[in-house]
Image 1 (cartoon, rainbow, N blue to C red):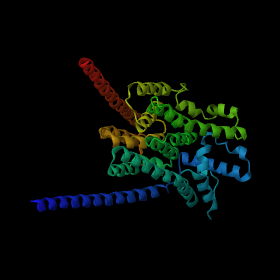
Image 2 (image 1 turned 90 degrees about the horizontal axis):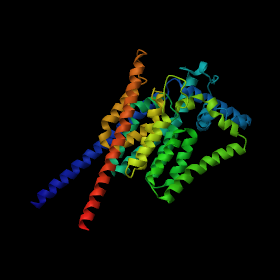
Image 3 (image 1 turned 135 degrees about the horizontal axis):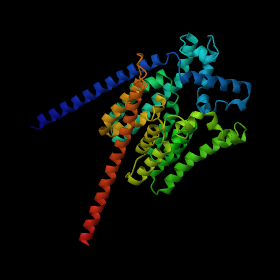
Image 4 (image 1 turned 180 degrees about the vertical axis):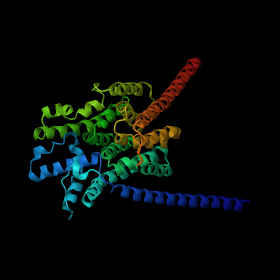
Length: 417
């Protein structure tokens, strides 16, 4: 009887090992296929913001080459990301090919070899940030679920998402670079390394403004633990002070220049809902403030990943009620991928969100009638709102359950007393 039992156990273990090997082999092939698709996408003709980023890199390289450092801040809020693109642009300048002037007329949808090479080189930092973000998503999921297998699946879910492939590898969305740094901060926070987390969020904020909105949400993790909250605040605020202090003392910028940024970048205030002169009513500050209140009042022991997810999702739901630019949703994509892998009950909300994200604007070479934009953007807005409500309801249920359990214990203690 015992030898038979040992044989069955051994056969079962061998079967599980074989299944694991097969799954690992399939994942490797999916990664290889996805990487090939991404590399081909990186050679697509530049359009949209990629042309603008090339112009920013051109301006910065000329300013630094001629020693006119005062011109470094000419691109305004795009300076930080532009500096990160300098190596790629410098390498293109060194290639033995023609170098047409970097402007819309010469580059937009151009299929010439020099322009395609520039498009590819500018997308290399984006591609690296794409992989890095996938690794961070995988690490977060594996740690939260204590399952390396789920971590690997999370990487695939991120890496092969058509929305990500389009906006990151085809469009060349530079937002993935600050998103990678932001996710690094969330990852460090989940490991209780709050000083490093604050530093990461600070540098992400220099490149894109959305981590600033996440900062007050993440403070909810501490709930009276002043030592950890102080480490996080110092890590976040000191680097920002150093960056702006250096820029002011060296004359790169002036206080007047900083204050006047919204007038030069009019879309900034419009994006966050200050300007109500157009037909779109945006209530960003109201929605974000309301979400902050709900988080502090009704969430029970929230974790860093949940707080980061709800803050960015609330921001993008409110700020982009009319649709906006699809590539901004890259900020939320790795957070939602992590969330759905940790909480499988979000699966339908996740699918609905990213299907509608791909429909608005429609990611397809087939042109659609213009009136469909209203429907697709409306569906995307409904999906984001649905996801926002679902996460809040799950957290509030946990809060209510914990509150009920506490009250029951108190009643039992009183009866015993």
